Length: 567
Image (tube, rainbow, N blue to C red):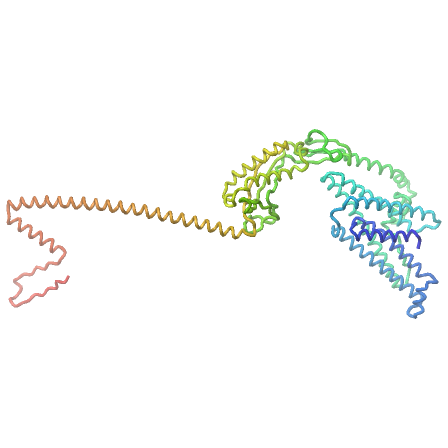
């Protein structure tokens, strides 16, 4: 085994140790070094097993279990199984890493510098190994591995430069640059997965050949490495790969010669054109743009729809905004998109921010939404670093002022529209004092309720208060009803008494007049008057009783007549 291969093994161990201690972005270099070292070690081990003076093979033959060919084949099968297991493990590891699992969320500046330095060291090692192997008279297949190591390290070095540079940019631009880094590292994972799959296939094919005791078991250099690292330049490597795939010698073709001659300048010009295109900005209708130079806002205003120009990336960047769009800030809660109904006793938000009210003895949850619109985008961007956070903080401040000395019952029974207008006017005055170029459109209170843990108890209290009010109103209604009914009955009795008195007086007057007229008739004819009065009296007495008239001539002297006078 050559000294370069031993150094590659040491670098593999160091990279693996770095991944183990938390330097997860070294996993690409670790996997490639491990595949490089394992493939070269497998080939060296197969050559070592075939040596005539191999003591280990001789020991196996002496035990009588194998002949020499069987012992060599058994060792090669063990080596192939190890390579197969390593590639399978790396495929599973790359799959989990591609899902974003087991990766650190934040890397410190020192870690980013370490990533950068490690790739520079791998580039120097790869170039040194290539120069060393090129000085040998006989070509070595490891030359392509080390050339690919230099190419891959250079590729990762570009993204690690972006990784370090992102620490000096504002948060928005840093996140945008971090996405580029993530996509770059993800492409490395895909490339390593292809190499692992190819070596896994080659190891499986070697196992089959060893089982049949036919052919050579050495692992060839993977196609995805020879594709761009077979020759001294990427251009020649691509031509050679095409010839290998097609089986046609295209290097003698005039068209291929022409394209290979213009490959470098065309590639450089294309990259330059792509870089210069980043200086062109097209602003869609209804939006405005803010230009930044090295993270600082440049210019004295925002620019509307149309075609605009700036310095190429990364010297200058831009941010598009939709200022006319009404934005909504949630005050006091983080909404849960799965919940559509707001109930006191059920959680309808991801998180609540309780306010202390009632002189510090009560707490309340207020679900409020503040809607605002940007009137002047330049002022909105340049007035404060985080304008939305300031608007949110201002809303919390004035909401606390309005509720801190008020009891819970007074808050939930207060007119929400009046409270919303007061809060809106105070927040607007605060923003105007900052000259932020923002207008508050509306403040809406969605709900005011106690904490979820005591919501049921509050509901019981509210229900008892409502029941109390209901009973009081019912008692007052009954009292009023009885009072007016008593007055009505008294008035009715009074009217009945007056009516009775009037009837009695009228009847007495009539009787007196009748008696006076009878007295006059009696004076004129006393007998007739007595006879008439007698018959009137009889008529009154016998008015409701049956009268039987019996002719005396039909009865004998001894006959008796019995009448039932009960009815």
